Image (cartoon, rainbow, N blue to C red; front, side):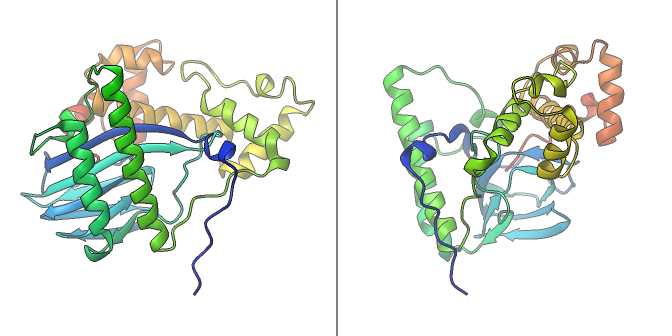
Length: 295
């Protein structure tokens, strides 16, 4: 079967992509021999240097053995690590202007060692660019925000972009292409989605504000968003609120009441009850469980 062609788009379209580099780390995983709860993960890639990783996502379970790589789709999953597992890992976000990821549908993909030799080399080079002469960096250290002079930031940014070009080339060699951007005739939908993606999570959703200058009814907007998202806008926003809660509990030491307030909960017990209803765990149990290694 012929591989799909890479989409041909103008530089102005490609420049609309937003990048958020989250981590590069190399080391042991902190929680082993136990399935994690469902966690929210960004796009990323990891290579199993030693050990074994099991991933449950999209209704399937896969095993990633020593020497193999895993290309992570942004979304939710559960994971399990064998004792002694060591990973080389990169996490990032790359999104179209409407907030949808550049790659997703064909990810959660296991790839052999032979197919990822160039990507492993590029990742080691990226690791050195970001962390200098360190030989091992944990996930916790990898996600820390460092103060850098402007010139050093430029070099690190360039290193990530170079790494990303090898990542994309590795995917394309296996027939995985970027997700199509919304067509020109759907610019209204793109604008609505963009507004929805940045809607303040501490505020109730008001569809009438999204259509204020669109000359369409809120019912029409509701139907368009539901058709595109596969759920109502309110349900999508609730899922986004839960993803942010998981990410902040995993990567920050911020007080629960502050996270609760930022997500629209005026009383911390209400946040705790809501989080437990969706995850079966309290925020405290989720944070203390060390489910922070997103691989």
